[in-house]
Length: 60
Image 1 (cartoon, rainbow, N blue to C red):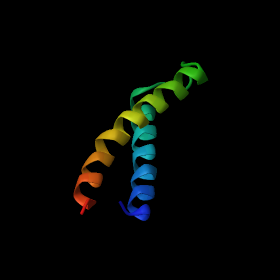
Image 2: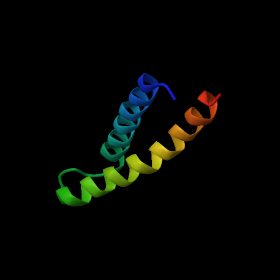
Image 3: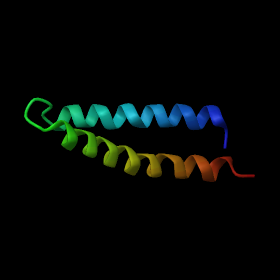
Image 4: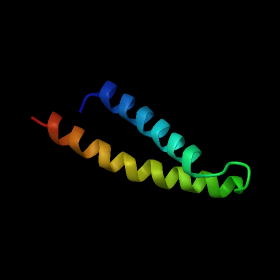
């Protein structure tokens, strides 16, 4: 797996999770630890979904 593609995908997935949390969550009402835990959970779940096809497609 290419390191550049992996790094780019990790950054894109992080910002996707952050965008969705901003859209569906309320930053002012929620506790910071709840926001962090939700961001981490969404990030890790999305990371698996997005990295698996990259890993399969770049295997030789």
